[in-house]
Image 1 (cartoon, one colour):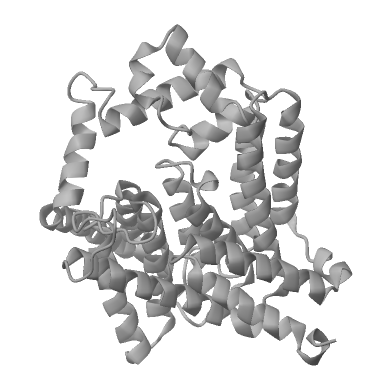
Image 2: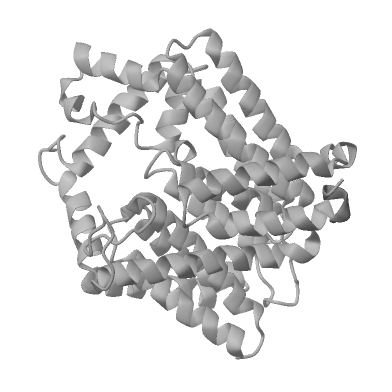
Length: 400
């Protein structure tokens, strides 16, 4: 009876805002508030209306879910299968909750909530970097405060894209435009004082795309994008020791005999051996629970150079992981989800950069098996489908 005194839909929307705010800050918070959001969504009801909103994006998500469950027929490691599948189903359910119940007037508030959470996370990160605050296990040389540096770099890139979008949404210089550019600069600096190579390289690609995305495609914008991207890359290479070292180490992997026990060498080993697992199980893969067990077998029986990678419980690349466990069918289903997210989005510019960032970041880690990253990715799918496009914001953009 008490719940009836409240407007459940409004309560749910504010709970969604709280969930989005906590994404960069707390594993426990994500779990607790995420559970509250799902409960409120169930209490809200109106399931006929909610399920009538299902589009091609969520149909593909559902089909991939079914195929993951079907793969239990040929998988052996049910513990890993349950871990991966439950995480996928749980966070894509939350995505569907956001998509079906977040009201139009709350969409921009949701994006602002995420930026607010990033702002708080940044304050902690900078305080660690400047040795003002000490957090157990976190060092000033890699101040990713609440998650590993790969995921944190991904979060910072997404925040940078949102701020770019907001910067161009203002026709004239005002407080919003000034805040967006200042915050973008602080996020850019934060991104290059941590060791998140995945986010750093994704950020560089975003620099190249900015003018092409937000202005009419012609030779001038092409030249501007190239100049901006190259000059930005050179500047960051010169001023960021972390980025400088990461670039040099990545290049050196291919200049001499590979050390398969180095960070870069382990990635090469997992990519090579994971690709062989995929090619030997081309259509349906080895099953949702078996890619790591199969990797161990391959290393033990033939590919001994991968022994330094045996400590990992994933293949360090979402595409290789998906292809190994679910074959070409699973890989195509995964990519198709993001194809339809772009096709069905209302703001193509925003969705394009977000999807580019996600797909590029998949090369750096198995983001769909990590809590922070899958929580963000599933939110981004929902918000890309909900966010309205103001055609007057930009000048004759080519991505429509």
